[in-house]
Length: 285
Image (tube, rainbow, N blue to C red; front, side, top):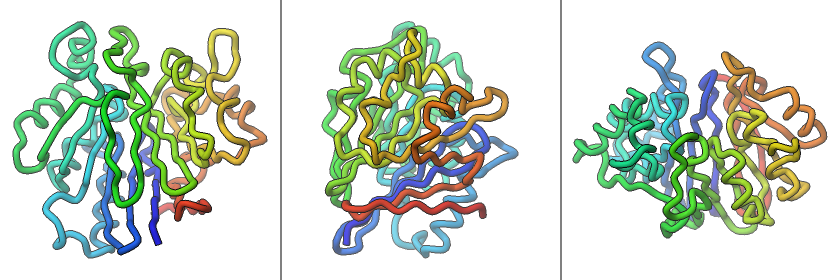
């Protein structure tokens, strides 16, 4: 039976999403989206190391990840990725076009020391990263063990030179009759363009920008995307309580009647589907 699982790893603040792809024959692949590990707090690394050890996978492959994606050039999404990639390896490393060389946007992105070091490592590495590539909605995304990936944002040739959140890669995952939507920190410019492209079979929606006001409301205080999500959608929040108090009380109130899971309350949260139904489990280990 095919299987897609997404785990929001509780990193304390910021994002780290671990993806598992399994086909009918039991072949397995793995993906990672963002990581906010630091030198002192290595939640993502520890979670992944324990997982791969428990599953006895270290001896089976040279590159543990089929892909690693950096959604956008902010430290709370990027600063654990270099250590993770250097230890586990990835066939593909994806990142937004704001991180390509040249232009105002890349200069702003590379002003972040974490991102600059990560991209330098990606360009030097020949062993741990087989391919690195900037991606947007113009790229044809792969099918991984029966799960179809689709880049919804950024639009081709779109780069916001002033707000890196708007450059976030928004990724849809579809297995059978179930879609998961992963949103980075995308804000109003993105949602004005792609809210109507939220799949009608979306069952799990990762709330953008940790549940902040500017990832949820437009200038008139209307939700940017909630009305475009099916009623049975479950909402996942990678919380950022300190120092930014995300999710915001206004967003909590707006989602009060919906099924919401958040890392500051549920810790590590796993959404799993066989392409028909969705199960949720959470743990703290």
